[in-house]
Length: 470
Image (cartoon, helix red, strand yellow):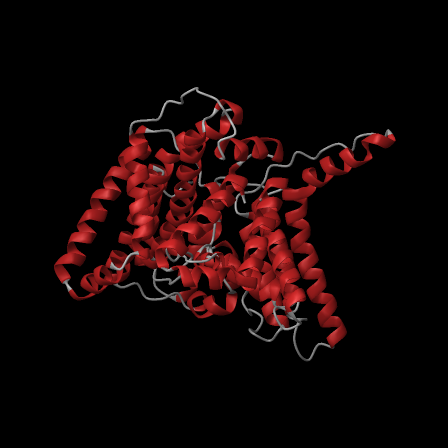
């Protein structure tokens, strides 16, 4: 059930009214858990059973991950928990990818093809698995204690606002809110609704119109495109993926806030970054933080010399690419970012700093856009001709039909994305904080955005969130 569907809006309003009437932490938690399970059951009636079974295993193992359990038993329990969760991810997400590549490798030897499983990818499986691994590792590290209540742990895993596409949460950061759901204030509803409206507008009024043209560009054979159309497609996708994913995060944070919960931010004006390193501090912050804390640091981080640091960066971003999907293009995308993060440490970041904010932002955005072209291409056989076309090596003259709403939406999205990179932005933020009429005007504007977005949701066929694939 998508957040912007009229059905969800209706059901959530009824659920919210019911939740406001419930008294007592235990009853509130049960209501949230039942609501979250029904929300997930709507699209994943089978996989929710897998999640519940693995949650029981996690909860049981968690009591064997800290003192007084002997160290060897603790390590075995952690390994079992991580293996079980990764096995879920591999089975549903990577089994056919691995099988196809194995069949390809064995084909010259006349090997019989291994049949594919063709399992449907459950929505949000990567996010769920990463949060569950975080819970186990944090207990093993003594960062947090095992959750005594199985109901609390289930609610942490299945909490519906963040369930499908994050932000990726850590249990110890949420345990107090989970154990005793916060009292809802009127300000929670207002702030949460405005944040939800902003996300709705980002998704339906910017990401989706651009996405229709992006699909058209990347469905065409690259040699039939001109360089202009190729770059226009890349530019549209650069904005589409940001407004689509940041829009989901806004809606998730807004829905949680209406229920009294505070979730961490997941984006911070990423296209205002002045280096690739800074981009990854601003983009999908919860995933970047997860990779840093649970992969980069255990590998040795930057504590073992420069060569090992560069290797660790490559490993982490190859893993990040593979996390996004079972496709070689995602692996290439991860390697591409690993390369530029290494170059940042070697010299690139220092060079860009000496060039000034405007040039460094423009160069960084260009690097990111090339990365998005890799990310959006279906496979390497499409990618190479597409990059050649974008570099002007194609002499095609065919023209694509550009929907009337694309130019305006493209300009609007670019303005919103790049405004934080200008000196005007801090002044606007200060004015918003001190002038009540400006805050009121902003809220009124977002209510209008909410209405327009819902109207579009009814009138135009929906496009799923991009990150539902991951």
